[in-house]
Length: 259
Image (cartoon, rainbow, N blue to C red; front, side, top):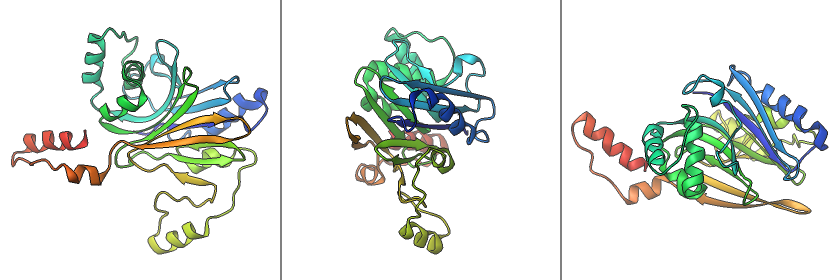
C-alpha cells in the first residue's frame, strides 16, 4: 500500500508561497498515490502537510487527506494501513465516537481524540508512517511502524523541520542542504544501500522503526525533539510468547507479539 506524505514545521518560504510549495512536494510523490492530492497548512502555527493518496479502504472523498479529527484538534497525513482498525472502530463507537466514512485514517484520528497520540499508537497493528499536528498542544508528531515497512525521512532546512516519504519530497524545499554524508556513502558502497538511520544527505535522517517523535516549535531555533520508542525487538524478545504448532494459533501469537 503506497501513499505519500511530506511537510514541514516552520515555513521555509513566505506564507503566501506555502500552498504552492506543498503542492510541489506532493507532486514528487505522485507515483506513490495516483488517486488524489491534498495540502493543508496553518500559517499561525507554521506547519504544513502534503499528501498523495492511493485509495484503498475508502474510495470516496471522505477518505481524502490531510484529514482533520471530529473536534478539529488533530490533522493527519498518513501512509499505510492499520489492519485492526475495524476492531478499534467498534471500540471507539462504543465510547461515543461517530464516523462519516470507512477509512482507517478516521479511526486513527478518533483514537488520538480518545487516548492521546502516545497511548493510541501502541494499539495500531499494521504498517504505517504518519505526521499529526496537535492544534491544542501546538506540537507535531511523526511516527513509523514497528519494523519500518513504511519510510519516513526527517531533516532540517535552517531552523525548519522537513519530512517526507521520500528524499525527493524534501530535496525541493528552498535552501535544502544537498551535502552528501560521506559515512552514508561508505555504507552504501559496502552494503549496496544506505541503512538507517542514515540517508545519503547529511541534513536528513530516517526516523527509526518503532519510534514516535514529538516536535515542539521554539522561537528563534529548531523545534525541540522528544523521541519515544513504543516497540523494539529487544523488548519483544524480553517478553517471549509460546508459538503453537497450528497455523491459526501461530498467527494469534504473532499478533500478541506485535502489541
